[in-house]
Image (cartoon, rainbow, N blue to C red; front, side, top):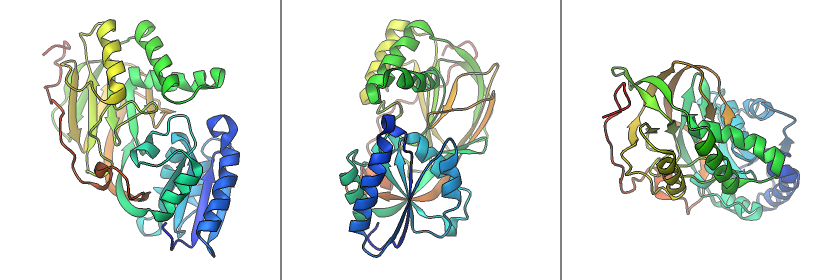
Length: 332
């Protein structure tokens, strides 16, 4: 962490993965103390929403803050760390014990606690980008429309069914596609350019490649390339075709459909005619106007040696087909 870390704070969500977080935190504490002899390792469980942000905001000057749980606790910890001056900001480590674990997967972290701790001990701090929407920071994803509705619906489904991960997102996604495929009018300007108008079903702004437990909506996105990847799904599209695109997105095989537009930007401003489903790292977001920026090289994150090249800023082959934005009628 690597191994020379002397002051480590583990912020754990004890309720993550249907209550497994508490046991996982106890296991991680033992393993960290064994791996870092002489280090000061403190474990702080969260007591409720936004507590993780508060704990991270009080971690100035520590060497490492480890977020144990799902994407929600990572979101809180990132927002807490970003309140600190850059020179007092600890490195961020992740131990995935959640339902989706998309940011952990972006960093190539193992889901087994013992393996994840071993990765952190051998990891190197790497500067990565952070997104920001209306003053709220995000590590992985921001989206509007269909995908946001799915992400928010999974929260309730998880409470009812106890399901987690890809199956949960898949079930919710099929239900939304069949019963709630809504289109929304929007106006957007990219990097301060002239506004464009159109209609969309889905509008995703990705720092990392996936959401929903591994759906690779922006498969070439990198958290270290100084860009946000934007994906827009626009009409006309049938429910049958939308379902096919959704299923292919699980493995990132959807990028050549003409109903999808891709681009890379540093900032954007998007306005909707009415409130739309919106989520940031899986958390509900309210409003109709959203100012989005990228904060490059904002956080030092502990990245294991076997991390995918794009995480550390080495470009991978580019396969996106970039097509023009839809016009005001949703056509070409």
